[in-house]
Image: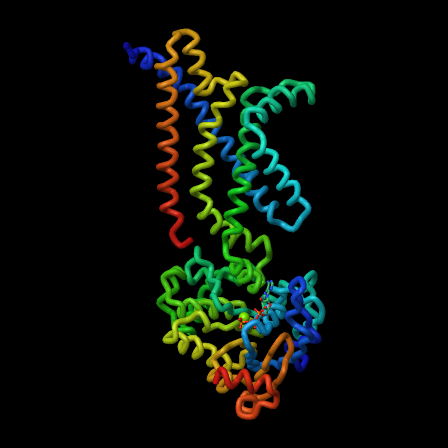
Length: 218
Length: 243
Ligand SMILES: Nc1ncnc2c1ncn2[C@@H]1O[C@H](COP(=O)(O)OP(=O)(O)OP(=O)(O)O)[C@@H](O)[C@H]1O
Ligand SMILES: [Mg+2]
């Protein structure tokens, strides 16, 4: 039984380039996902007709595979709009829209977990709905949703590997390419797994740290 | 200035099938302390919360300084002038005591932040918590929290203060401090409507007592009068249980 460490070492630069793209994709998508999700979560509990749209968005995205969503955006959308969509753009779009739905649910739950008395106290002081949201509700909700948001970040980091199917050279795709050349699937997938683990481990420690800093007085 | 700072006429409130307020009317003069008593579930909180529209009345009207309260037109303004103190304090846990007090005034008025803070410190002194400005609510006892909540309401310079059982969630030894603060407010001429089970406070501080049962005002009069000589049987039954 021989395990080719040297192969892993020599593939490392290429794998790390892929990992860099994975991190970048995830970070950008989480960023847009949080914006989209905060909006969605707030609309979801609003009394406007938009709450139905938010509910449908959340249900549809959570009820269909990310893989299919990616196909729809990368292969389906271009035929509809009669122009190709770059793979990177399609990936960010798919991951952001996907993440937005999950974050939307997290934000909704976070807001609803707050005591009704917080709204009432703010209202009784003459604060507007917007002021209450901004100064009272969201800051407290944010502290509570940090842990599930961290989990969502980690989930997205892993799920981003799905966009390898549209030939985007993130970590998994890089692994496939290297195996195509070296015919050593075990070493390469092993290395890919370790890199994923290191990344999620760092993120989860970071989230723990952040959590400890901001969840006081929540 | 109209004679009555607050006037409630023919107020009805239902939650789905449950009719909680069944035609309540009351008038409150400026500077008056009105104490509301009644059995649990009689609608005391609902009445109080309807006044600043935390509960929207099913029907009836509420006038503040002679002006009809309309949720679409003047509610924010009315709420800035009608403060409320809750049984569970409802302080903002993520903000320091001082910020709890300055937040609403700083958002709703164009005033120098230094002035707002100075005023907040003054109020803290008034409620006996000068040293707690930089604390977080969780670092305070229940009685201290409630006094911060009173200071927070006062920071808006309200013309009327509503109290919904402000001492019911407190340990017995904390109740006195809060009642003392309320008594001083009354002495300074603050208009107050107080729902409470503290009969001593009602007797000593109240100008007028309302007894509510099953969604209507059963009896009203000066506290001394009602306590010593209740006219209605329901009032007598209730008082015999709580006195
Ligand atoms: N938001 C609500 N939805 C449904 N029912 C409610 C709501 N708020 C109050 N009620 C009901 O209305 C009735 C009166 O409640 P309210 O809180 O006004 O009584 P209360 O006189 O303040 O009693 P307590 O002394 O226990 O505080 C009760 O039967 C209560 O269950
Ligand atoms: Mg009550």
